[in-house]
Image (cartoon, rainbow, N blue to C red; front, side):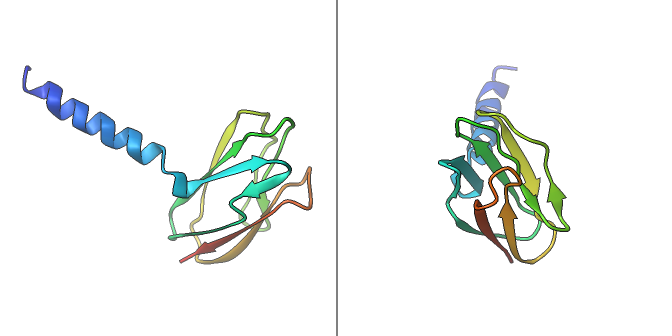
Length: 102
């Protein structure tokens, strides 16, 4: 059992690093998506973090339409199709994110 601790610590730190991947995080702030354009591989997910003072929602026509998320909430959406997609917020229609899925 003594030898299991280093293995556990390595696995735990790897999991934390994967969960906190800033390349796959989009922040909603100032009624805008940050960054405004991202590229990911098919099958990867984006995590949307609401850092604004009001609720947000996200949708891509034909792919997904989320529930409203309050400040501080996260939402993760998987992109299973290749192509270029526009992500919007029903509540703030001028918000737009371009997602390139390879």
